[in-house]
Length: 68
Image (cartoon, rainbow, N blue to C red):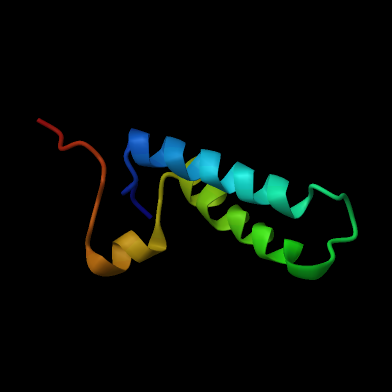
C-alpha cells in the first residue's frame, strides 16, 4: 500500500489512538464495562504509524503533500 496519510494527520491519529487506549486501560486489566470501546484506538494508532489508511484508499483521498 502506498502512503496516503500526511504528517499532521499522522500526529493527530497517533495522539487520539493513544488517548483512546489509555481510556480503555485506565483501570487496568481485565477491561470491564464500556472500557473495551477504547480499544478502537488501535485503529487510528496503527494507521498513523504506518501512514496508510484503507478508508482513504477506498475513496481515493490523500492528505500527503503533493510532490513537486
